[in-house]
Length: 387
Image (tube, rainbow, N blue to C red; front, side, top):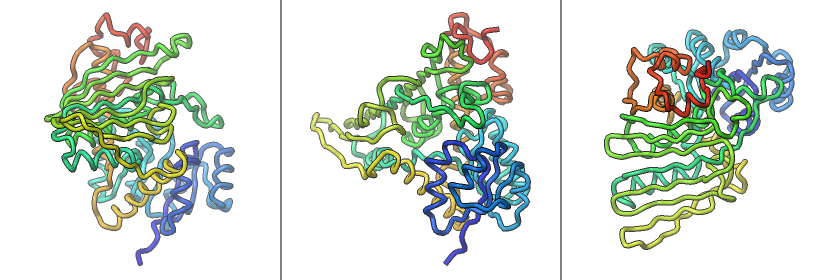
């Protein structure tokens, strides 16, 4: 029997409660040895959740990294702060499981991917939607050739619930430049799902990005993103917004289609799927079962448990995890490419040009682009364009 994977948790925000905590508490061969968080309130909450001793709690994550027994760290802090923690973890010889997105800046994401490889360590991203039963079933149906060749995958996320962050840290951090973007950056799940379903790496992206829902608040990041992605052999469209709107997926192939909808018509990740069916070339419908949990909360927890198990096994088997650093890097480039397209009014080629300011600076480089005068993004004053 393999020895347990001993981990340290860095950051104890709300995502830990519904995602990381169930995984850490249920996998018998993954042991939590320590927790670090900059706020004493969140450390106290984590201590109660996990039954930790006082000497297992740290304000400075670097003290946690110095614990000899730890094999890996889980990074669950806002994305702006993740890269340095990951680099320090690699320097300490530790594997990393990081919340998504991998970073705010593509050049930094590339650095993290190279650093993990150079150190011979695993870096996995919390791309837990890979493990939700509805998307696994869709992927399985596509792989079995049920609708022929994939032509267009349309992912509807127009009803993303705008949950606040931990009040003890900063409840509105997702609406600030700390997040590196708005709803699209926050729900990058749809972006990596599109690439996963296509089974190819993206070549181009074009987008409209706006903030109509929060216009009265003078927003600095978007709450609406509509983008199209070109792959070598297929296309994807992602429709995303904080607010009320259509949720689900529509997949068109050469010999049919697949459609999926959620309870109360909500978006993926916020309720249970209740309908998944295919229509063949003769317009005949077939319903497909989804291996759902009892509740949405249980389904989310289960996706984290499977993700942690994959991370553990990737370390033991010396293989890449389901979502390695390179996958997080590619997803981030699609997001930044979408922002650049919305600002310039042009199709953006992928991978991003290494000389591009958004490659080296993320959204902080948008002011250096050739801004299209009719850009909805500029009109909304996002990413510093108001000035």
